[in-house]
Length: 215
Ligand SMILES: C[S@@+](CC[C@H](N)C(=O)[O-])C[C@H]1O[C@@H](n2cnc3c(N)ncnc32)[C@H](O)[C@@H]1O
Image (cartoon, rainbow, N blue to C red; front, side):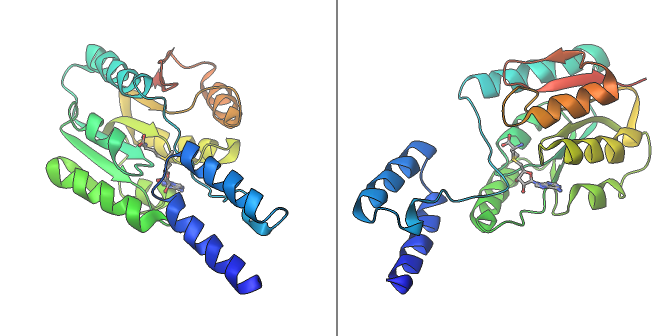
């Protein structure tokens, strides 16, 4: 029983990388009926959950980019911290000359996700992949060298604060810092860290991206 449970859990993890949340939930319900009380019904836990509301996600990012372009005109270099499969990176690459995509792609399921990122990045030569953790990547940039830094890595309070601390000096005067998930709920750490640092963001978009002009 122990071995077969283990095998099924491995199988479920593989499925977990391919199926959307609703399908995964249905699978767990199904298995909980087959084997009530077994370890199978425990939710799989990952550090990273990339939640997006279709429509709002893309439009929010586009509005964010228009907002930044409206202030600084021609957009030069930006860093995205937390690129995952590259969906947002690809959108940023339509507006910025160079997009540095920082992500360690370190977790269990990340091989598959990183491959998706690589496929997207291949289509956009202005995306530069940096397979690194946030703090390590920041040390590669000179102070006041970037037009925009977008934080979308870990969303707990301490991590967001650390990211702001590492990246803020890298941004040019009158340019922008921002990020994702400025909303209530599980990711309330983002609001607390951002508000403590900046008072309030200048603007929050429909996908819950926030932005603040520096200086
Ligand atoms: C919410 S997802 C990013 C979603 C992506 N921006 C998008 O909209 O498609 C978070 C990503 O942050 C990455 N990450 C986690 N810890 C990190 C760290 N310390 N530095 C950089 N990236 C990190 C994860 O590997 C994951 O790919």
